[in-house]
View 1 (cartoon, helix red, strand yellow):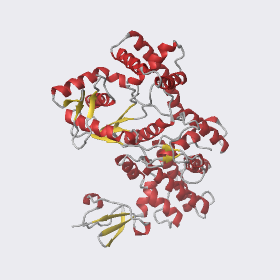
View 2: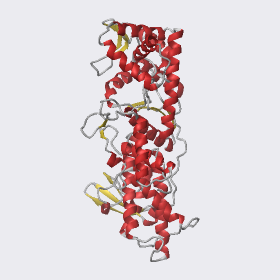
View 3: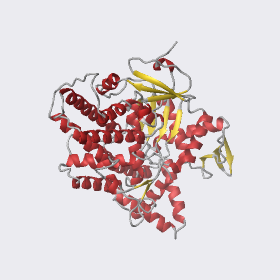
View 4: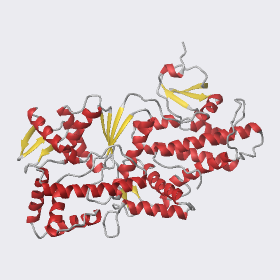
Length: 514
């Protein structure tokens, strides 16, 4: 007995060439035509499937929308700038990729929790507190705090006692010393106000901001439990946890009694499991932290802090590189401040012809985001302004321009309803769009499964190219027949909706006019 494609449960893929069909699968299975399928053909071990025109037309009228809740929860750790340091270009990838993954999973029906794990604890604060107190400064702006941190390291080269004094200040902070806490709190408040300003410019809003300091008390519990379960052991005066499959153990407590990033991350995982019981926890953090997260994930499993069903993911994003292949930095070798890059993008958007400030901001910020997201997450990126702001090719402005083009056409027939007969004879450019646009939902699913927003970028770019080829070759409003006009308007409307939804998932605005 023959089965429909839905009943068979085969793994579908798209053939490399569209003349070979819309879908294909390898292996046994006898699929019969139905309300979706026009015909099938067996080639070797593959079955190629062609979809009906009626079904393809029906997909044009389906408005992409957020799915119903699926009962699953995803926690994503992203952005995570460091207190008392300017928001640098180095944190941009985590912020942009993290927000895109957040949006994609929410669209697919997950309960999504975003957590900004602020770097507000650790021995670096001992150095900062020492400098604030020894210089008697009242200036706690981020710029001045950064200068104090740099100055500490310069002076410490000649004065070996400074490192010891810094450790003492951090010890005072950990023990709750009033003066240390007061200065630290001021640094935190100053930094968060600065970060919020950058997030507003980026159009990013993260649900929670549990800094590392939040886990101060929880770290004590982790250390005690690791000892009690006999999972932690002494090594050269430090307390470590052996991780299956790794030669290097996780350092839980240093030989001087100080906690580590790993201690805090274990406390964080324990908290997230108890608080939200997630199905997936994603850490959108750079590739240089790969070993750290292997250790933390392995130790957390040993300690029983993560349930068996919870998937732990480290996305391992690459770096921004300059055109010479080195880490993207100023001529003086310093890290580049993110706000400077964003403001430069807005200026360049104005040069493209975006006259009003809001459009220039949407295009400039969107260009930066899209440039990042269109690359494979784990690749290093050569930062190139010409490619970032290009109006042609795989760029944010190109997609925004294509969306604005669809809206310009539709504005001339506002409020109309479009009807298309299934007997309509499609030209190749119309068919190229029909045989691409219906894939949107499955591309969103694949982007989530592979933690790869670039797959969505690739889809949207191809859709925009197909639409612009169609637009440049065929008249829409002055089409040769009423049925052609109706179909082309329906295509234009559908392309506009998918581009707007897709760009929205990437965290990019789609202005009606450019």
